[in-house]
Length: 143
Image (cartoon, rainbow, N blue to C red):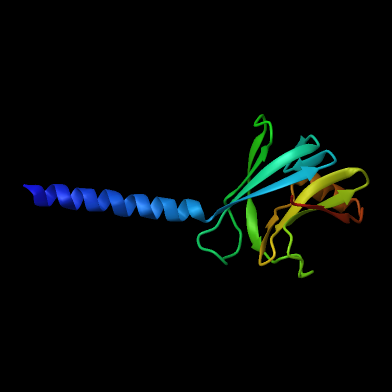
């Protein structure tokens, strides 16, 4: 009778360890973005943001699970990303890169010292690019 209870208890402990291990791979990036910017087809206000990054395992590319949250908690966006590379500068800092068309900024990349992820271009950004407007790259370092 105690054997089934022991097996159930062991399974609960193993499941808990797996969940804690997965949560341990999440990374929070804090950043102050000093300008209005676009994520997808939506414009977000300037301010403090936290980006939650979740990796399958340490050292793997950043990817599909990225959440952008304003520090006041009023704005939360789940971002579609594709694996990318670090910014290539060898910088030990994490940063966000934006493509700037005239006075319109689009979040383009999240870079960490070892890897990064790119955001897909929205239809609004593609429209600006189709007008042959050359974007400028602007970075915001994480805190």
